[in-house]
Length: 379
Ligand SMILES: [Cu+2]
Image (cartoon, rainbow, N blue to C red; front, side, top):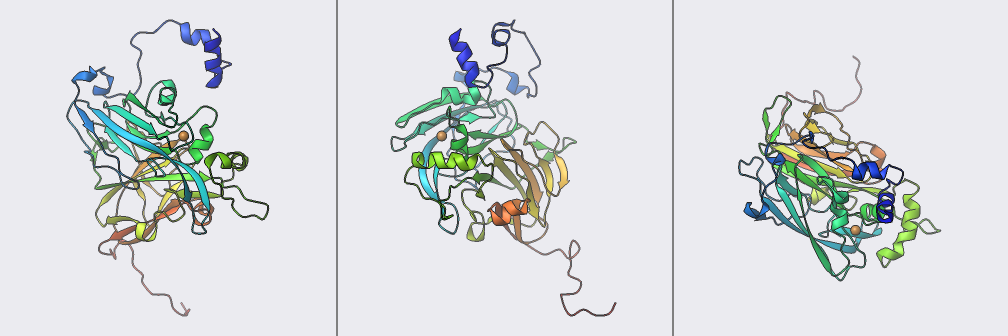
């Protein structure tokens, strides 16, 4: 009895009527919500084909099929937690980051609806903190967090069924310090594609030529009495000051993929005129509003879930904190585009902006400079 009460309290459900939830009659055959035919079948795992996928660092996404006709598979991934000090802007400001596989965001995993995800999470002895993982795509045990607590020097393997399609956030969520681990870098995306691929509102197939993953991070770097950003030797040393800044709800930096300018200049995303690009945008903690300057979102799943029809022709879309959104765009003009958070203070002053460098032929019909800037003349 005590155990149940303390568990409910831990997960913030202490005031709910625990007995009704836990000992109430089990309803048979309820409608369990969105699921494909495959996803609703419980498979004998031992008979399923296994594939091992090597993850790649963002903004790239590992090679994957968009449509599959095979029966579900067990897709094996391995991620290693890395605690490390990183530089987050061009002024040399540092942060004691915590990461999945050394990158912010962690690598994007891609599977198909009905597949089983089998992740081995490694926490090397060189780290200091315990970690775990909560998949928003998973069902039960706080997203897997309860079953994946690993101390430095340990690893753990979790399997869950990816029975809902969409892009979903995953993040670390250790009891008591969830927010700190998340804003310190521990989040990423898992994309669960429908087995027959993406569709528009009329069921017409949508295909992409490239896919990029962008993780937006709101950072809370403490300052000293003189107003300079502080530098710490260990994550633990940064903890108390960082929580103080977090409580103001005012980030000092908002960055894509780990630092100001991570996706600009020679690190700009690339595309060609005529290519369709899929942009995944995750934000595990705070709302954002992606916009492609000079372009649009041709098809956008703002809330990232492919069972819903995509919105069409958006200027700016909205990704709520704690989710991942997906946008498709076919480039029609060459040039350098900016992809940013269209709270322009957050993008231009705090860092939430990247570039897409697009090659190809200019289209005068879509846009033409009729007369170049010059002296003002009478009408
Ligand atoms: Cu962690």
